[in-house]
Image 1 (cartoon, helix red, strand yellow):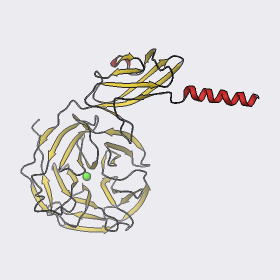
Image 2 (cartoon, protein in one colour):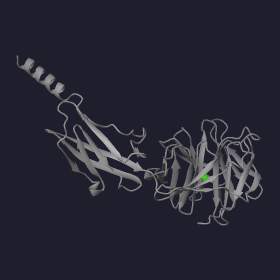
Image 3 (cartoon, rainbow, N blue to C red):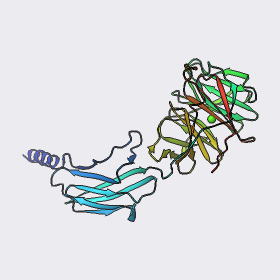
Image 4 (cartoon, rainbow, N blue to C red):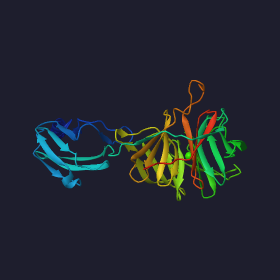
Length: 344
Ligand SMILES: [Ca+2]
């Protein structure tokens, strides 16, 4: 008899609280990191469901005075119009009868900067091997180095930056799909796409060692003693080169929202130049805030009717000794050489 009473008590408790909870009903979360994009509306609406869901009060969280709340029956409206662009935390405690619900979310607000549109002029062209499925480009010690992709075809090239001539080349492991490439600590560092490895080469293109890596490898550059890597999302990861642990994550966004599919990277004087998969432009990102400062358009420089086999722009390399920047793309017939000058 005792066990029967216990059984009905359990059923009663489950029935009372089944489906109870609080959920966001005004916005969607981004699938890979749960971020909430706040673009058109400055009000988040959460709703309590379950039995007797009327909200009594709300306690402020770490957002302090920057947000205000409005209770409407079983809904709470959180106004975030005063928050700064970029990532913000929303923390509060909702009191609902004897129950409490915690709201802990990360939102981002769009950038307050409208990117400057730049169209490169006075560029030079160098030849580029149209069989190169370009995935990364870097300048180091008077040479360009290129990483190319496709499983079984991936290579590393050393290229003369004055002529575009190939000086040396090496195949990488035929099981690997080569991706982003950078120079750090007198070595070349190469991502692989889904092979879970970072490969380290000397400048004669000899493999020195491999490190395990848990993300997809897309673009790679370096700043100081850190590696900066993309994985096709809207984030750039600042990695400790000794263990590839993430020291900082930078979310890229402009005045219209977060920018996904960040690919090839190049660190240039406090900014990160990046291409976006499938686009013939390069965005220039503030290293600290993630805001896009400029958008450099290359579509007038690649005639896609004439070069119908050419894929996306996917190589950016910076020679800081003479301020030249090199660009190319998957199966492009040329490298573009440009000395950028921004009149700002
Ligand atoms: Ca690069």
